[in-house]
Image (tube, rainbow, N blue to C red; front, top):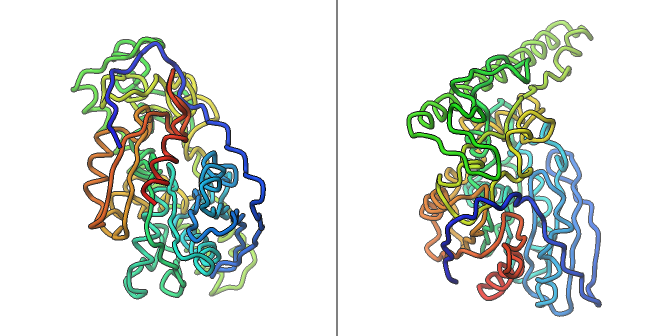
Length: 409
């Protein structure tokens, strides 16, 4: 596999396009499954079985439905079965507790593990960190698994049967939702209840700090970036503190209910205390293409105008429970970190990046790949955007990635 290096074209905007799914070949056996988890939830999965398949690739993501992943048809066409699984938190940020998600993965993976000689997860984007976290816990002795979520709830991972895959493919696997949030949260927020209040000295989108209107790339001096990154961490700390206070309120109400049996205390223990997290679309690398350069276009995964999207309703982790914030969206508290999990990934590994990715950038990829503990690992850079769409004048990245994966398999 060949690395592709080129200067970014700052006139291009976008990069949030998704390729069309490849058609499912005729003759594919398709079966739908409903699978109970250890803790009483139910998750769904779709098994695509081409005649004679002995290897199954899984596609799974903690918060997205992957049954329409654009690579599924390409893998089936090559004779590889695919298990596409949904999760209990599909479509939501507010309920995504990664330790619970591992129970979903464990329950679902039992289906293809029982049928195929080889089971190989394809961890695309956030599915990469999910699978790395799963491999960390699945290969640990039960008594060494994480016992409590960052919000203090019991995980029951020690009780879980966690099938171990035979290898893993990481495709555009970013450092984890929490790390993405740590780099993209707006530190100029001065009032969590006010979506507009800002400190001008930390406003990424203020021309006085180096911002330029798209399609021109912004340019930030190192002193501003150092202040900005430090202030991002400080905001995450404040949100962590707020989340932990709300967890403590819940636990106090639960303790009172155990003593009093009062329905008011029970209601207080059950009442949701969601965090509203304004302005989470403010990574300087979205708008300054000189920072950790690759072939990415201007903008973020959500669109070509972060300076506007940052103030809208779209964005990561905008509404979440205290447990979901601490487990998934806090880059300081989460266990679902690729960097934390990578040393425990010991199965044969293929690590693929897209040359125009806006979320997994070269410096992060270098660090994360080096941290993977597998004695057998390979790395490649594929032309394309984060979801596998084509860069101008080239084949779709998802097709190039499928070629590389099938060759490795």
